[in-house]
Length: 115
Image 1: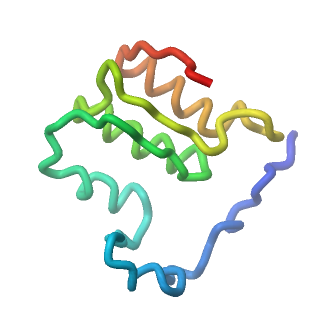
Image 2: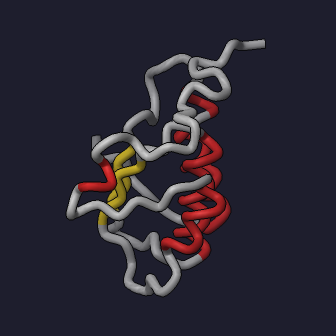
């Protein structure tokens, strides 16, 4: 089998918020696992999302927030999704790329590549 580029735990910071992040006035930190924090983050969000900077690093985290946005009808024609790690690295087919294509299939979304 293939060896993952980022082994389990590679992004673990022990549950701590990175130094200085919580002091920023334009940042609201939602500490916790994606599956525990993302649904609450979108509660009350009814307006479609215009732009998403998808920087979740892992398939599971990316799939989590895409599924929440899809199930809440927040991804609409014209929404731009920018992935930071979509292709061109070892194992890309099982990361953000796969999460996006599963979301597209699950919610019947249409898309085009911009770059």
